[in-house]
Image 1 (cartoon, helix red, strand yellow):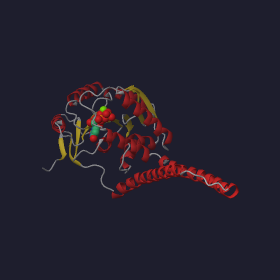
Image 2 (cartoon, helix red, strand yellow):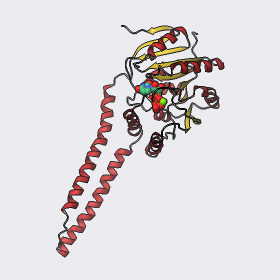
Image 3 (cartoon, protein in one colour):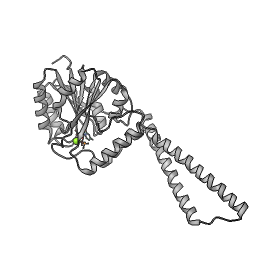
Image 4 (cartoon, protein in one colour):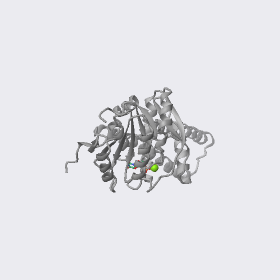
Length: 320
Ligand code: UDP
Ligand code: MG
């Protein structure tokens, strides 16, 4: 298989040894059922379980598997970016989760849609099989992001998508450090189409996204694709100034014409505390943007590949 594949299926893996055999089984069945030439790009995101060993064994036996090993855990978005950058497909890249929550069997359907003239066919979750709290949080977050973002990011769609070679090339060229791929994918443009599906439950193991990581992802969505937080602070400031001016005028009039002095130490204290809070919040929001500039300015590589196996051969071997 020296010719380049038509399709690359890209899946990041972090401690997914439990799901691995099932993933391989389903991917093999899928490849056997399709006439397209397919490579599977698996990215080990610094797993601490047997995942990299299993990947190595498989890739050395089966030339359809192209395995990339990162030097440490870089997080889902960067692992995915590494996979997109390594994929050699000439036609399209199918981005899925390695925990089988995104059924790979949908590839033929997505591919058919793409043939209708789309560059991106992204999955839209019709139903989620997750707990009520998570579902509610996702529901609110996507709606908030849509209402404040300057990019039209589709509702309820994750990274699960089929993207054309040229869209992948644009994504690879985008140097942003705090990545929010589903937003970047929308930003790219071209013809895009949503495809509804039901998101399965995780096959085995637990979600590798901690609450902290989910928040970091949500922050990246908000601060990288919206000017709303800054605008919001400006507006709050403007409204506060208007209100206080009116109040000031009323006070002066009362003092001059009615010689009344307005009392209210408690109210004063309350307002001081309130606006100290607002100012700290505003500083924090500016800080979020400054922080992003700071990290971007370092211009570090996005991810570090320590090992790579293509066509059952090491193109890059771990030195030790
Ligand atoms: N993942 C990764 N690096 C991480 C966290 C997750 O590569 O630091 C992978 C994980 O193995 C899975 C995919 O990203 O294949 C989605 O992660 P997960 O299922 O934990 O997220 P959820 O579906 O709960 O949002
Ligand atoms: Mg999952």
